[in-house]
Image (cartoon, rainbow, N blue to C red; front, top):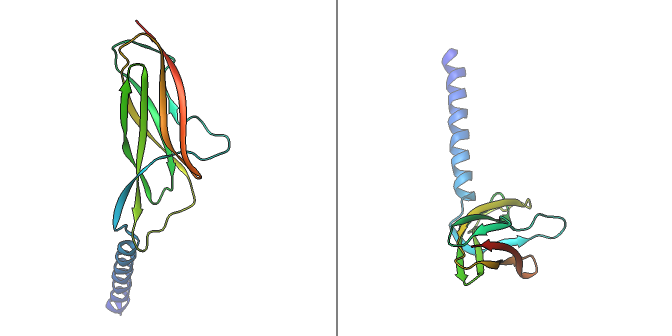
Length: 148
């Protein structure tokens, strides 16, 4: 009698494990596609970049760039940075799960990433984040004072 109950429980447990493994493989993305990050989602939201007000010329400093996406099918994928004189352009990227059976939830969570910048000339400098919104391209600009 003990074996009958225990064997049924073990059998049911094994069945559940096989079922979970099958479901997770069905829901697993077939691949990840790199996309420009979503930086504007509407409504009241913090700016997509947080930077210090003042930096020193020639010294590296860190800014935090935030994109938004589904918690089930988006993951941060870095950023491209171009600095020219006193202008830095940052394009943040995310990866989006693609493939049959991928389920994306409607929640939008923040995906912050740190980016290192350096301005060599003193004066007013511009940081521009180039991303996208739900309706198309989006940009955000902020300035920093570069002290000698």
